[in-house]
Length: 71
Image 1 (cartoon, rainbow, N blue to C red):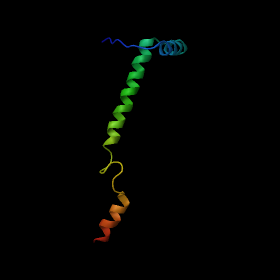
Image 2: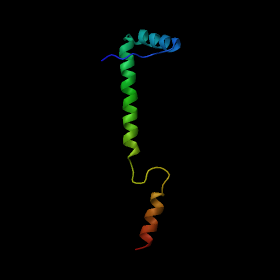
Image 3: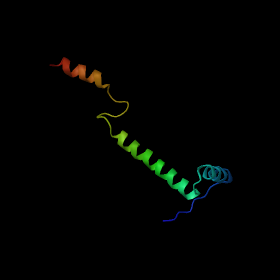
Image 4: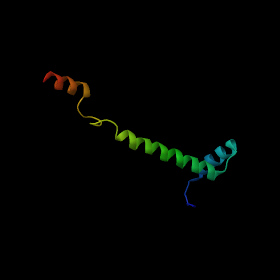
């Protein structure tokens, strides 16, 4: 599938320079960049679900000590 992407002259020049150094096409570099971007965001989604309370909630150790003190 093809996609039309608008870039400014600075981005295009940097992309062309990188393509020349890596001996790859612009399209190959753009596909790799998209894959990297999607992979990073996929990992963020997984990390967002890690843990029971999430960020900024009750300290786990404090909760554990309080719960055990009730026994």
